Amino acid sequence: MNWLFHLGRYWVFMKEMFTRPEKYSLYWKQFIRELNNFGWGSLGIVALTSVFMGAVITIQTIYNLVNPLVPMTAVGIVARDSIILEFSPTMMSLVLAGKIGSSIASEIGTMRVSEQIDALEIMGINSSAYLVLPKIFAAIFIFPFVVIISMFLGIFGGWVAGTAAGVISSTDYIMGIQDSFVPFNITFAIIKTLTFAYLITTVSAYQGYYTGGGALEVGQSSTNAVVYSSILILIFDYVLTQLILT
Image (tube, rainbow, N blue to C red; front, side, top):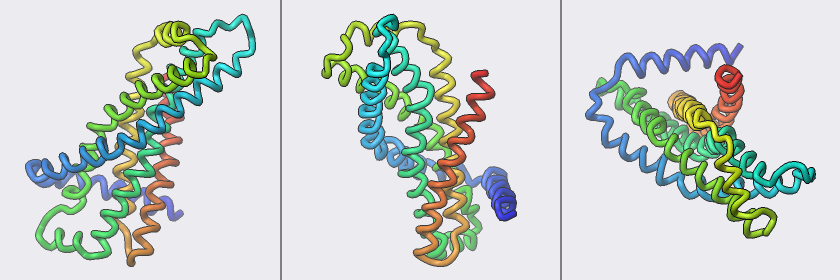
């Protein structure tokens, strides 16, 4: 029943954070700092992963289309929909959970074990709101832009890989990307991204906030933040797909 204890404490943590916020002017500097960390600081790994995964998706799709009756434009369709619907919002969120989630948990966990959070509480500051709300707002604001960039880079990587290998023409790939495009897929991807951004920041902050002990426990909290965030991303990916697309 340990998970029930953590679930209840998580909701109490959320309630205290949102019902007793500090003045929003205090959050602005932290908000800008987190925007830089979550956005620009993550762009390198997002770009690299997106380009190569787009290339892999395209090449694998081409070599699995062994039926001559299937037009080559189908490669562009499969690559586009795979990247937009699943790869960019979900896989990038898993990557960001590893990078950002561990960072949030270790930062707040270190503040907890070094008694900095206790000092904030003594000064009458709502420490959970002061430390976590800017991270939530920054992630919700910047994650959709990161995911949209990932979409473009993934599709671009597929085009480069397919044409460079000579397995598909540029015309066929571009025609496939444009064929039967459903704009709602972008909206659905953004909905998933916003949900995942909230999960990553709140779960990671919760793990760090309730860290007890020393450096070893901070490392454990960081690991738990990545593991639990990743599990929840996969669960909510299925739930949102089931609710919205079916």
